[in-house]
Length: 88
Image 1 (tube, rainbow, N blue to C red):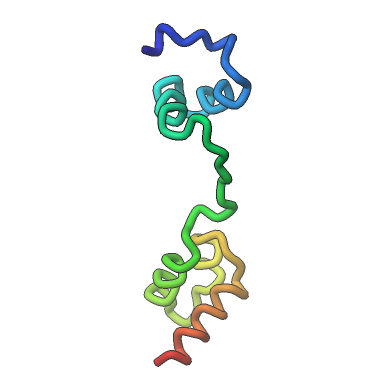
Image 2 (cartoon, rainbow, N blue to C red; image 1 turned 135 degrees about the vertical axis):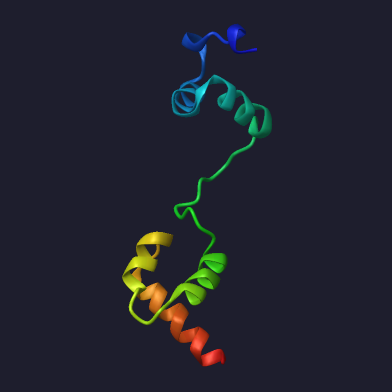
């Protein structure tokens, strides 16, 4: 189906998607989400799932690294750790 796509006539949104992930990927996005209004989350990782991983991976000294890894603030990481310790 790629050979049938007239890239020059694509909507600018789909043209941008095709430049990022290719025509085939763009067509998958189009088929899955066309007509929908979507919001792209700011964070790659789900807050609750990331919190679980932070608690598991925290070694007492790596809050900065965990904050960078999961895309949240170091303050958030420390709050997650503190809340986790209070539950125990």
